[in-house]
Length: 445
Image (cartoon, rainbow, N blue to C red; front, side, top):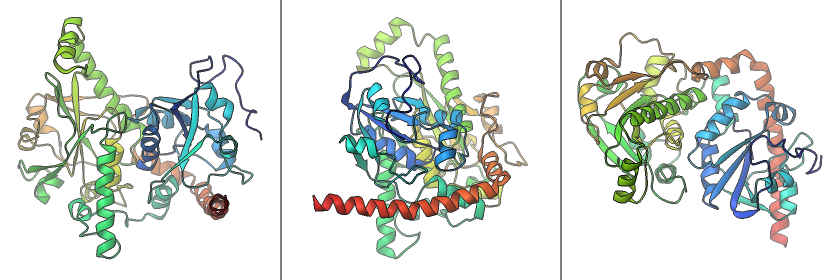
């Protein structure tokens, strides 16, 4: 395969613009499978976005991934939805070639291609970035450790629970977790820094989202038997709600942060935009007043997302749910462009006491969607219903895509995914050898 074989004919590019864009070093290209919206993918996009002013994200087709790597778990449409939702992504480009092509990146005006510090190879064992490396248009960022699609599939196949975090507070403080005391402290510092990084704005350079941790009794956290406000501890002092913004609250496990979760959040924003339109938010006079007061416009709603602890989710779902731990799930929610604040360790039941004690006061609305598959014995949203602030998002294209559905996809084709894991392990050995050869060659020059 050469770098030009997959170049579309004029007018045949998967997304616009159809005319070639002037190449700029401020326009960065990343590409990949993006199978699962895990925080490793978001971390790569964040680092790439910091290197320029626009980030274009190429997404490989199901067929190309099958030919080069094995079956995908998520469809192309689902994977595009996840990339679209990333705060640092400027444009998603589906059907991008598996071997990164100079004509493709040049057409979209990108000079540099960014990838992690690992080697990715095609079906023939050759480096997928060989053409852009030869052209001197390749930049390396640090690969996010301890997370990958392969790792997540392994958790599902082996039904492991070793990824659970018992206490996020103690883990961040270096008091719990793997390794000795020094290693735990280093891990805690890294986790705290990553939370701060993922709370950055769309440039990746400035503070954006606020991050809190809720503390309360175990009974208040797990079910509805205790009515208590608890207290909120600030983790990242991001941007607070702006004047006249409605504060709205959502919560959940957000396990394997899928297109089902993402579309629910998008629909929440859409519903609030409609509500804003009805109260004159987009009138020219109102817009001018916001610009004069703050120097920039902003949306009508400030969306706060509560994320439940591992033990809380496991109590209701059992087996080895959640597949992602509280830290991993929190980062996934934090990187989403539809979210303005995240509350770690939020209680499973948003009681009146809890909602009234939120750092922003009682929210204007509490939204829930059709993405849950928990066998509940009571209604956790009875309080917001009684308060008259409960809203439900109806059905949508991805309403059945949740952690349970994704696990079922893996289990229905278990042998195929086990073979993928085996091939990935073998390719990993060859790719590591190639990386070491490349590193040695660079040191010799």
